[in-house]
Length: 339
Ligand code: NAD
Ligand code: DAU
Image (cartoon, rainbow, N blue to C red; front, side, top):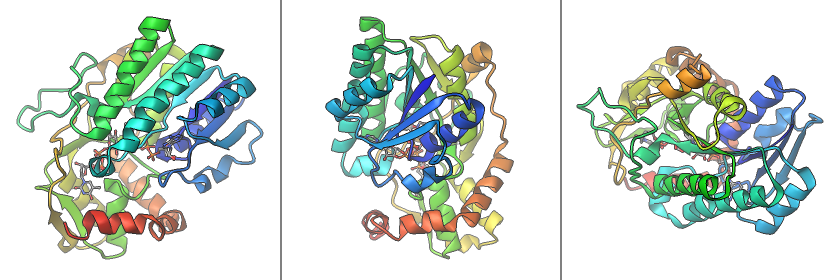
């Protein structure tokens, strides 16, 4: 079995590659990644000498390159993680989000049609459903919830989902989609909430909390997400969407306090800053379908997962310190300099 993983030098893609090479040692994993600011080849060091692993730097929008790779590798399965993934950057400049997330996805699916495929899996997000009010804790996103994306990022992901389903219906492409809630764990780029707060706290820098800090996200340990995708690839039904989330809703401010507590740093580091434009209030997944059909349940409790994650960032300072000393510094100044 040959699995083509796109965006595998990013956070979830890399964790997925580690997971698949461990769980399916006889599979060949081919990873392509454009290596944008968010992709780090050093993340894939632990598997670079594995004979069942190949990496190639390739943009999913590069039709010729993608077709050539399909001819060479004849993948059985494609798992599309490649995306521009950061909401704040999409607010600053949507164009590359539309290019990679929409056009790139369609190029991959065209290659699947041309060369044949057993499964095309699109890694989607719960953000396509928009948000839920804080005063209705009884409401959750199900697979039937209408798409109501709020940001350029989430609307580009919603577009990709719709095009993927159109390819299923129109061309019979065996497509599945997972829509997952917020992931956390090792190798997450330090512009996202949890690693950013860990890095700033360790440097005794202000922790920038948007708005009132009461926005709620539904946090899932990254390995639980990887296991969900593996189950969908093997047992999920083509043409279906599966929501993935662990009923672990937390407000941003409570996460920030937890991290400060873990690191023994003072709450005086918390700094409330101007809110994100169009900031979604609450995300909450109903994972009943994937549980009932595929037996998936999250295995890592948040209390354990966040401890493991903080420990990982303490033990792997070189990985993220290299990142924040480079191009990312300009981004940080632009986003937080005058906020
Ligand atoms: P990430 O930003 O850490 O990684 C994205 C990877 O894609 C990077 O390695 C980047 O170099 C690569 N990439 C970007 N544009 C590319 C292109 N044109 N061609 C090839 N590679 C390209 O993102 P992540 O957090 O690992 O998210 C992975 C996927 O999961 C995304 O599709 C995202 O929408 C989805 N998702 C993320 C979360 C989350 O909480 N992080 C939750 C649900 C869904
Ligand atoms: O829900 C799934 C989505 O989760 C994925 O589709 C996205 O790719 C992923 O980036 C994530 O999106 P969020 O916007 O929820 O993640 P982020 O880490 O950027 O922000 C989490 C919350 O924390 C959000 O309410 C904004 C807030 N925040 C974020 C940053 C970076 C702050 O308060 N301060 C910050 O500095």
